[in-house]
Length: 363
Image (cartoon, rainbow, N blue to C red; front, side, top):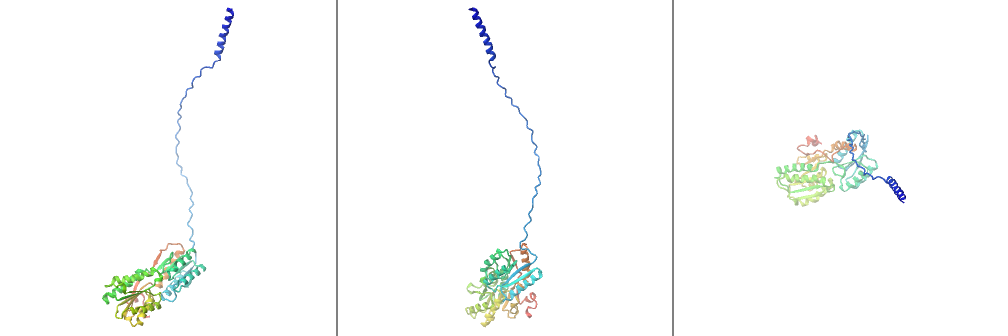
């Protein structure tokens, strides 16, 4: 019995040892170690990169040519002044040796000017010089030329978008008004009875400025200003015949006792028409007339001893082409041109006409 017990205990002891050998050892917690790694600093290297840029040259001037067709529409061929303008443009164009000049007559009529403009476009004009009187047609005519990229120079009557060439109107007017005002102060005691204004309303505000200049030049110079009720504003239509008619209709409103009257006119032709109306009423000695342009048509009256036509501001139409043609060539070659180009002005009277136009009084 004891032996069996001993054997059992021995067996249990052996099993215990065996089981102990099979049990897993207690795990040891791993140690975590932080390692700092130094990262080398990157060196920033600046590099110059050459970028090739292609510069596109400006586009060529679309209107530039070796030879040009330039078209000129004259105001009318019935006035000495405008004939001189046309002749000067013809001479200047011919002198260039590279202009074919096309001519037309606007006949003092807006509708005719529009027809001429259409014809110029049909004929393929490269540039246009417009001398037309009716400002209402200016927008229509210019819209046609702009649509075809045709540069335009407008003489005396501005057109929207065109380069203006012509009178410095207000200055030209004042030259005449002030000159006559000095004469009135010296000879009529600084007083004028009535003023007749031979105007051209259809041509708009720019030509009207010469009338304003004449009136203000006189009024600012004479001792006694003329009241508004003694000033007649008449539409001359820019012609000698119409000026004579409207002045003739107005003269009955001026008493025969009024001997100191002044007439201010838009040009020489209307000045001559005014003088003719006073002559027809046997009142030539009752008026002093001043005008604008000083073209040859007015020279005989300016030269007379009675000086009824006291004088006229010169515009030198015989020199218009000398400025207009070079300006047109610059426009066609895309060169800068001022928006307004003015003529030079001098007041011409019996006192200086021979110095300005030698031989004028011997014609």
